[in-house]
Length: 194
Image 1 (cartoon, one colour):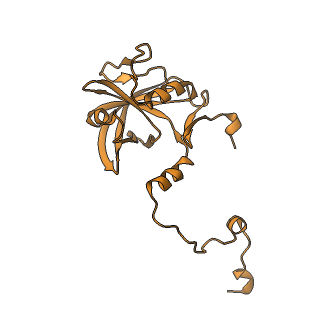
Image 2 (spheres, rainbow, N blue to C red; image 1 turned 30 degrees about the vertical axis):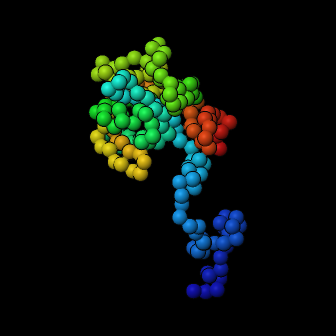
Image 3 (cartoon, helix red, strand yellow; image 1 turned 60 degrees about the horizontal axis):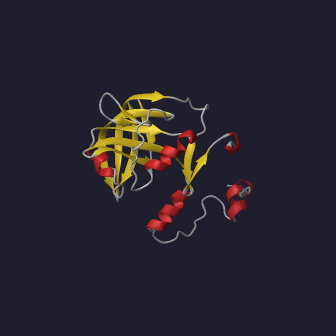
């Protein structure tokens, strides 16, 4: 190797941190629960509401863990915390409804994330599908799903679901996406484009 080929050209990493790619860095100790939460507070998530029919009636919870994993067949995943009162009914269900929200649906996101309230008290906002699942039909989009697998992961359960039917009420681009970031709700728009 010649001397000129061994020279390094300063890059973004070196300029920002005083080191170059390939340099070893020190790594802090084990990550505790609070450190893990802090990591993910800076990672925004789309907002969804999951509903199911439970033995005592319909249940709902707000989730930021919904992700598509396959288009053919249409599959998605999400996780539910063991601390949510809706979790036992969702885990016992064969089918659920995943509601994908935008900023116009913020009130539903807040309602489904509030403990100790009747999320279905306003009967003008929801109905049942012919198959029995509770649905909030006015949201940006929803899909009825069959649960195909459950995986316990710490204090949560990761659920994989096959999307069977669905409806889009507001096309992407005509809406204002709703995300949850650093413990608060945010609406994405032209002002957030980079």
